[in-house]
Length: 71
Image (cartoon, rainbow, N blue to C red; front, side, top):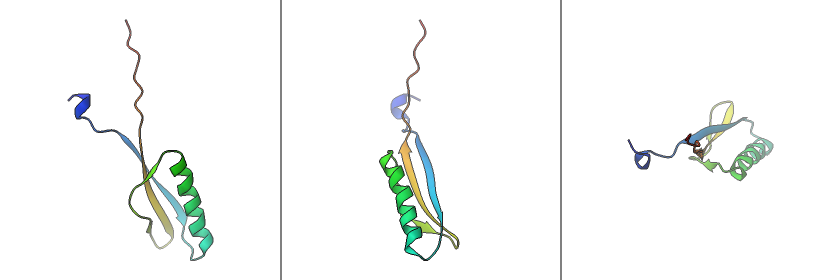
């Protein structure tokens, strides 16, 4: 397989916060997500909830570094 046929590798992460009905919890999740956005991550889907946690999935392309060739 040639490099042109390969897809760009990505890093996938989920930002998580304990879920409480107060606005401070939502603000804290937003703050953490915004930190990741400023470091190059992108949102992947919409936020989602469980009974105790709030989540936001995010992705970031992994920059491949070329290895120097030995003569």
